[in-house]
Amino acid sequence: MEYKIKTVGVLTSGGDAPGMNAAVRAVTRAAIVNGMRVKAIFRGYKGLIDGEVQEFTTQDVSGIIQRGGTILKSARCEEFKTPEGRKKAYETLVREEIDALIVIGGDGTFTGARNLAQEYNVTVIGVPATIDNDLWGTDSTIGYDTALNTIMDCVDKLRDTGTSHERVFVVEVMGRDAGFLTLNAAIASGAEAAIIPEKATIAEQIDEALGQGRRKHKNSAIVLVQEHAIEGGANKVAEMIEQAHPDYGTRVTILGHLQRGGIPTAADRILASRLGCHAILSLLDEQRSIMIGMQNGNIAYVPLAQAIKQKKDIGTDRWNALHMLSI
Ligand code: F6P
Image 1 (cartoon, protein in one colour):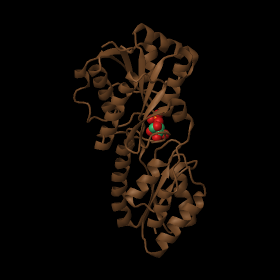
Image 2 (spheres, rainbow, N blue to C red):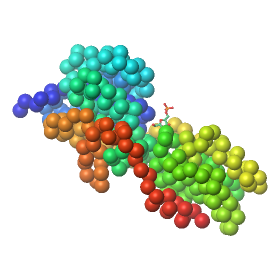
Image 3 (cartoon, rainbow, N blue to C red):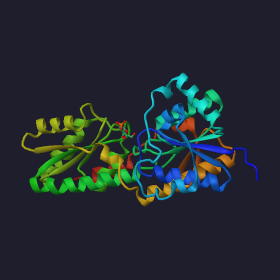
Image 4 (tube, helix red, strand yellow):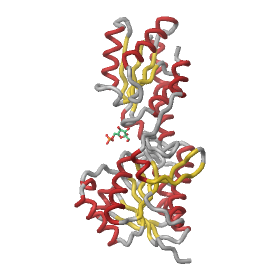
């Protein structure tokens, strides 16, 4: 059977996320099973510009489903943000006879893909992968569940020492502009407060969580702070707590890039496998410029422009739950 798309290119770009390898495996195998050739592009858009391309067989993706990071490497590429950079990238696609490009990454990756698609009429499909879970149109992004579990494990450990020493631990969590990791990790670890950019009134949040909880019956507390909720991050929040409650012993932990590593959870492997397969199936369906999303357990085709532009709502339910449970 003759397919319109004969060769697909696949790359990972932006911040790496656990499960990216499972997505690369799924894209590669689903493409080959459906009669397409696969060209792996290394180092994201930088590799596309520089022509770092290698044909993949099914064996090239053996034994990677359980590995964190990305075997294709990743990069944040300033050159691709320029028309000259995208021209070079397009020339690589033409030279390598790549008919469709599958990009595995987050918001920045999709913005680059959309620009390339608009300028050169390239078929692009996005597979959402970022620990931040900040993409509209998908309930979860690849890597989010693993990162959430990593944060929960860390906070559980901090809780042990926090209660022993009767201290307040202020823990800084990644997420770029979104509070999904912070709020959900706070619920999962029984934290006293989550400070996230989606909700204002930071001083009030601190006061409510610590003033009440600790005075009444708690001798320690955990406060999770989204990295960009407040200038100065966790250190600034710790300073505010110390000023308001000089009697509290306060310590700061910045979780940093350990949140991006580790063995992907089953949920992330399954999500990556399903999204990767559907990236290929969507090409057979003659789709282009879409993100493959997961909505209520079902695959959804989301226009790339919408996934990039719309802001994912964090809602009030989880926020309320945290507040009810942190007394
Ligand atoms: O988007 C993923 C992410 O880990 C964000 O949570 C964080 O703000 C950013 O990437 C850090 O980027 P870098 O690794 O380039 O410093």
